[in-house]
Image (cartoon, rainbow over all chains, first blue to last red; front, side, top):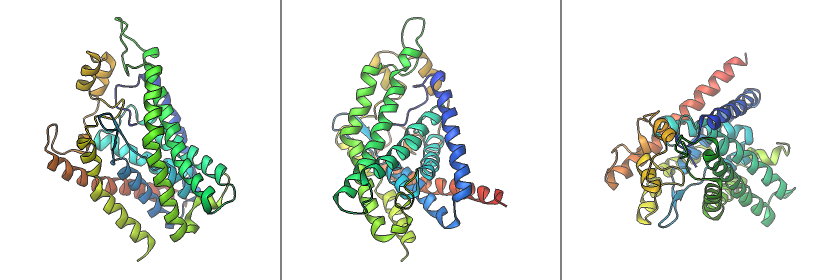
Length: 228
Length: 110
């Protein structure tokens, strides 16, 4: 889901830079107000975790690959605004150092993976879990939060790819940027995620949440404050 | 051992396991992620490279493209080692950024 340079037109990537800068500034303000020294290592670990889990490319045999992002579990554990920072830092390092995701597309990629995933996951988790702190409903909430977060992000990414032919084409009528129309891009992105990569994100969210419930339950943001 | 120490060790183990993310797709003949094709792959798919895409794709030369120190055509061994090294560089890089960020924010508080 790391959109490279050249796939998005300036009409798309510039506004997305604006949107992401907006989210970053709110997130940093909140971090300044609320971050305590004892949480800094968790923030660093969250960014490192997100960086690493994206390296585990999950193959569709004979087809494409994809990966989990970890944004769901980070949002549930540390809150969605902290997750915005953690996943954004990881995505920016990936783009600058490893060429994974474009420089022009940092805004869009951070919006899809560092904003959409955390907020959708956090919201779905608390919506489904209600007041349960264990049992099957809690587990289902954890799985679905990760699953839904990545799935919705993939719909956004598919949409961003798919509108490019409508926005910009050359004199010869050929698209200038991402070439596939919405009817191709949207189902391609959404289905491969919903059927496989988001399932991985859901399982990761569930397993890690179980671990933290057992070892560090007082850390879990989503259990402390129900307001996002 | 504290939970934090355990978690750092867990992350290190993750970094050592990252080559799974390059070996498994290779074994199962899975290609690039959808929409992340390089210009040559696009040419194969479409028969041409979109003008704007060609221009913008040359914008940034990353120091370690695709987490691979060996460049295109690197052997699987080189890719595996590159992947582990990239994972560790990633942990350090995001760690430094977060540390600096939290120092700056904490200082402004006073």
